[in-house]
Amino acid sequence: MRSLFQLSCIVMLFLSSAVAVSANETQGSIRGTVNYCGLGGLDGMQIYVPGKMFTVITDESGQFQLDGLGAGNYTLFYRKGDRVLNQNRDIQVLAGQTSELGVIAFCDRKGTAFGAGGTSTAAVTAQPLCTASSDDPQCKDADGDGVVAALDCDDGNANIYPGAIEACDGIDNNCSGTADDNVSVLVKHGMGTCDAGKISIAQCSKGYSDCDGQVANGCEVDLMRDDEHCGSCGNMCAASESCGLGFC
Image 1 (cartoon, rainbow, N blue to C red):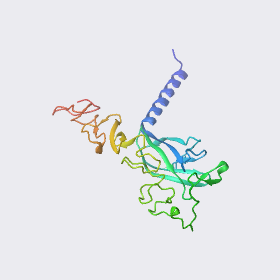
Image 2 (image 1 turned 60 degrees about the horizontal axis):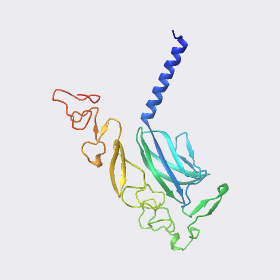
Image 3 (image 1 turned 180 degrees about the vertical axis):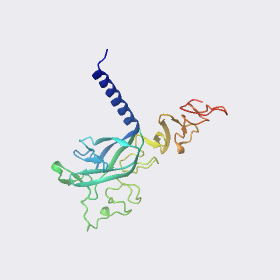
Image 4 (image 1 turned 90 degrees about the vertical axis):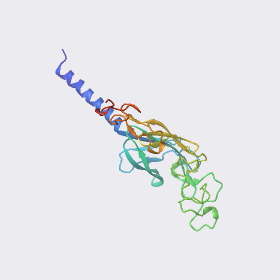
């Protein structure tokens, strides 16, 4: 016969496991890889969401992942020492899923990279170091996106610059050298993939499905409650029935 202490431990273990499972189902993650000034990852870069109590400090690979984020939109900050190098706004996080940013390529306005000890060294662009008074056309920012022409792969489009969020449009939005280089994209109640500028649904969140085949509305059906698609697409409940927990 189990002692009261043993039973208490079992109950506490069960409750702890339940809380962990619940947290995993209600929280999401953001993952990506930094490519700074064309040099790859930057050792010691701090990546964080303002107001959150954790920061990822990258190694030379530039890879990072932020876990434990509730569903919502977030802004990521990239900092080295006391300098904020970049930020990505409006990154959507869904519960129980990982938002893949792919390669985040950016550089500062002067075209510099950090060497050992945080000192600034010229980036490998063969372009002159730009100053505020420079008359060099390559030091101008024609489209006003905050990146000089020498470092901007399209200085005529303010939506294309190093550090921009890559969209599924067949265009190299973040100047990484590859169009549509995000690993995956978000759709309503699910995840999608991008191929040649076209999004397709790869996976629906638990309990949802894409029954109409339209990418624009994502996984639009709640299989747990939809009377016309109860438990699976096309499974219609009788007129006298209603759908609950996926059963008529």
